[in-house]
Length: 233
Image (cartoon, rainbow, N blue to C red):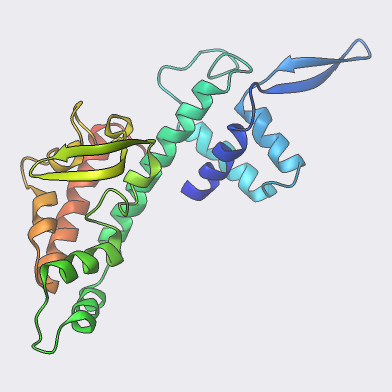
């Protein structure tokens, strides 16, 4: 679903306003329209398939914004910006769902194979190699490789600080736009789980079994977190 939403978002960002043509009293009239019309237009122009169009309509029906208008349109007809914002939010949420499923379905065998393949001649794993393993398995560990971080807007910083590290010249995600951020601070996803500290367990895991367990614990926490946010599955 995430990739389909990204496709719609990419096309919508090319527009300044959503306009449609209707026929009234035999005359063609330009009228401001909404996201449903825009999706139909994408299908008409062969940008999405009819199956994707139907999937999008179903998705919209199930994920209607709580604060939207009670009329025929979620947002004021024609406006692109609020619809872009909604799509960006949904893409971020779908990325979290995908990550949860990845955490839940990854096997101990897959993790063990990664460890075995990257061990040195003494059968040891260094800290750098351990980070590489975690990145290759799920993207965990850096702002550039995290699949959730990748779905939010980024701004360029010459340096920025996340305890206890200082990162030079990076494009940092705007964490306040991420569903996993619980405050105004950077990378709130690290501290939102104060009870089981699932993020810290992932960071510290240094054996296949510990990493497998940490993935499981993080998935349990994230599912619970989304449920508390009233996010539908």
